[in-house]
Structure formats: structure tokens, C-alpha cells
Length: 319
Image: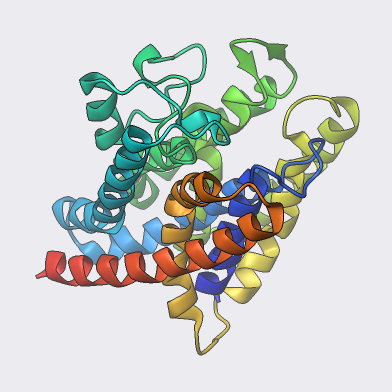
């Protein structure tokens, strides 16, 4: 039921981004959703690379999974920004120039909108704002062949990198400096969250259960301590919640559900398209009830279309 769970996480992320979001500012459930996406991605990428049998096939599959739908939504977003000026969604009211467009289409740099590694041309945010986390995932994909090889032949070095990234994030959670804090290096950049992807990778490998259980308990205890001691630091509570849900992911991954594949196919289109739908719907109505209705119908409708396009392109890409 991983597909259904990813569908649920995509809706949680979408709901937290609503202009009239129903969630408290003191707790952002989208952060928990993104962290669980990181873990699931690590788990799935182990199996994806293991079955791909070659680096080229693995990257080809990743490209056709991510980029065609991304290109479609980005192009629609650029057209909407060019045609309309919609103050309801300030992140999308940006000056468009050729450098910004190229960087957005490349996607790989979309998380470089946070200090200290800011690409100023991308500011204030990527044209599809949630894709900063997709760039972080791509940085992990780049490392997958290397990590897979380490886990197979030099597992000690794999664990050194795993623990190094974990320690880096733990240290970041103790700071609130503008360029070094629990937000930037504890959640957004690959340096601090690589261990979460690698944790999923280990579960995919499924040969180190005692080590995994020990590390998991240590992490949860640490975040409980941090949650009380650094309670005002960004996203400590959200990441702790995500960690507490990890065992649930492992329980449901082998469960069967008739519509699991269908729901899973909608998760990425929901994630990638909801800001575009916000922009379009809010241009035509400022009534909250009509806005919510339009968003839910619009996101679901465009996601079904995008999922069909994605599947068609992906199948052709595999040939």
C-alpha cells in the first residue's frame, strides 16, 4: 500500500500549501510528509537500481518518471504567470528571464534558494515552489549508484557516510544561525537529510535489521530530547512525527489494495501541479468555498490527466 500512502502524503503537502491553509503555523505537516517521502524514495530507489542492472537504465527511468510531467506543469505555470498577475499567490509573481527559465527547466538546482548556497536568479522560489525538495531527491538519485556499490562491497564506508550525515543534521538542529540551522541543513539540503534516504536504502537492502532497529531507536530518542530541549527550532516536531511513522510504512508496504497502483500514480502529479491549480483557481474566485472546491476538483482532474500522460511516456521511454 505504499502507493496509497504516497497519495495521502501528497494531499497533506498540498493542503499545507493552501493560501488559506487549515493548519497551525506552529506545526507544518508538509514537513513530516516530505521527510517520509525521502525515506520511501530511499527504499524504492534501492529496488529500482537493483532491477535496472545498469546506471544508464536507472537514470533513464528516473528521467521519464520525473521530467515529462514536470516540463508540462512548468510550461503551463510560465504561461499563467505571463498572462496574469495574481497577487493571491505571491511566490509565483516573479520576473521571468532566460536564466531563470533555464534553471527551472533543469530542475536540479531548484533547492538553491536557501542560504548559504543561494542562486539569486531563482529567488524568491522555484516557479513550482515545492520542487526544491524534488531537487534534493535528484541529488540523492545522483548518488544512488555510488551508495549501492558501497552497500554491496564496502559497507563500512556506507555506514560512515550515513552516520556523518546524521550527525551533521543533529548538529544543525542545535543552531539557529541564518546560514546554519534546523531548517536549511536539517530539512532542505542533501548534506543533512542524506541519512534519511540512506535509511530507506538500508530497509530496501533488508540485511541489517539489528543495526537498523538500534539506529532507529537512537534517532527517535534523540529527537524526543531535541523536541523538548530545542522546541522552538524549526521542524523538530515535524521530523519526530515522521520518524514515528516509519514503522507504519514498513508494515503497509507489503499490504495489497486494489487501487494502490492507481492512487500511487497520482501522488507525483498532485505534488507537482497543485500550485499551478492554486494560481488558476484564485485568479477566477476569491470566495473561500469556491476556491477550495475548485482546487480539489482541479488538482484531482489535472493529476489524472498527468498520470495518464506520465504512464504513456514512461512506457515508451522503456522501449
